[in-house]
Image (tube, rainbow, N blue to C red; front, side):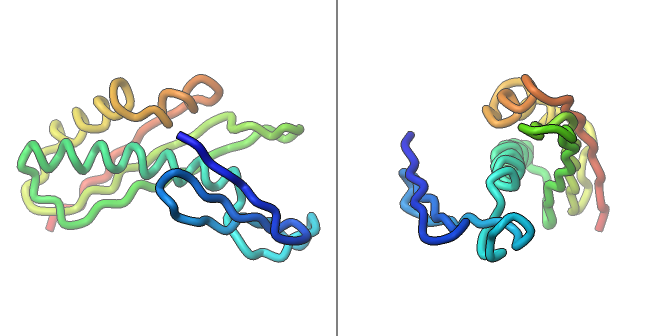
Length: 138
């Protein structure tokens, strides 16, 4: 896997990887940016959500769960001092549908955390990860 981050101007960059999609990167005006792109640390959280979310929805589909709504919400705390690494991350899986089996969701989340999601495996080395499940029955 390869990626390139190219400087555009001031504190504006664009990132591109093997998939070919370009992601604008930027920062706030407080630190010289133009608020014109995602913050690099935000992308870690989005990557985590996408990685575990794809695992969980795939597993629930195989378990014949009737999922009609699915969100992964992530909240991260960061250290106060530079390099301001993540210290704690909470991942909330919000699953909506008909007759959703909590045990199936719990197992899907567990498999993602323990076996399939490399983002979770990496981030768990530097921060405390907790998972929460919310089921919305239709």
